[in-house]
Length: 338
Image (cartoon, rainbow, N blue to C red; front, top):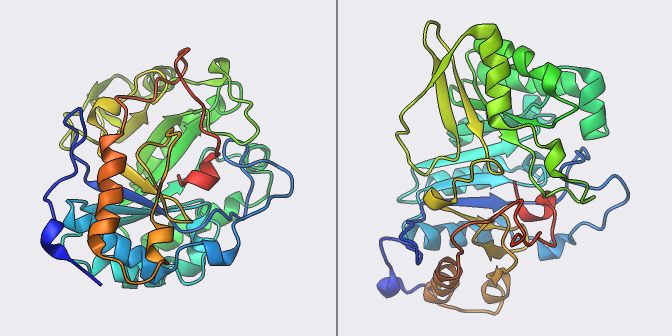
């Protein structure tokens, strides 16, 4: 049952931030065990019946777009372990008001699915690639498979994707030697590259400030090899990355610095967990339940919209990582949605 009379053209919080992006987790399961996201041992994943169906996600997406959401990012866990995830892509791209549907993946299953994702209309793929060294990949992922990620990147390019972004997590004492090789790889293949600071969302709770390899430190390493970089004016103020390009050569690299330079003031993102909970921040300590509403029977879209509005109203000014005021979320990254 639907009631469009409530619809608004925006979701604006107490600080004037207009929300235009929704990250949708489709599963908490993953085929690797990166230490910055998941614990090494056995895990109790969500029972299948607790995870939103594609039909339920599509309904939530239609309500969200009526409120002003324009961009969707499919995440996990690892979204490509969810059966036929391209069917969700196909549903989302057909919704009026949707400007972009993207997907974040570890890339291990991408070679097998890239063509179907392209046919479904996926606009952008973000691929995690922290290292080009197999031994470091295994230390991070607790699993072999770097070659499968690289094959997935090649397959995505062969499938016609022109918007492919590599996301590299920077961890002091582990990934310093990967900075320049990753930049060279991205330049060679014509790919976007973004370095991301290590955040306190690891399930083992081993995060420490000393392990944060700052964006400034990474940029200094790149400049030592390739020359000075200059910041690029942001076309979208809400984008989390600060992009830089070189003064005397082609190439652009972005830096996402949530620890040393938080970008909360321009945040336009909300999150939907795999079991149907709205989160207004990656580090939120509260959630707003949509699944119960969706499964109660005949409810108006207005009731779903009210949960979005409540979440936005309660959004804080910032996450205050690495300060005495910071409250670590009870859930790790794989349970929230990357």
